[in-house]
Image 1: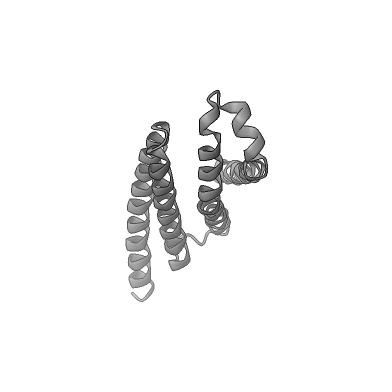
Image 2: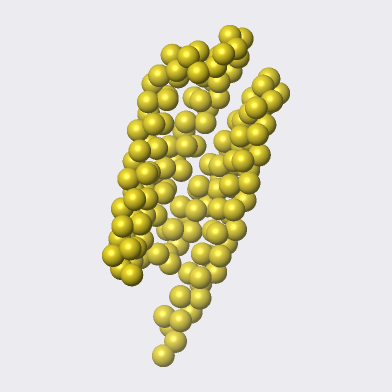
Length: 145
């Protein structure tokens, strides 16, 4: 079972790094990528702007995921630091949802991204609350004889 967990952690870490590289490429290449991908000329600047506005929250999310996975690899999961990381992830997803919702007034497709980001923020927030309770239970059990 441990081998399977190690492989899963490795796969997750590789995916986080791949997404970080994709994010970096998208940030650098947004002015050239979006005109190639979008087949509507008047909307390119909106997508470039949304890309730049959501890049910082996306980068923070990837960094927090990297640190969460490092914590899991070290078998140090039930910590206040991980609760704070999940809190940061949920707030970054909420910020991205607001960016996408703002862009949705100009292109309705972005409302779909806003809904997905808001739903992901809710899921992460619930997981953060569960982890916070688990941390508190662990803390209480550590003081029990």
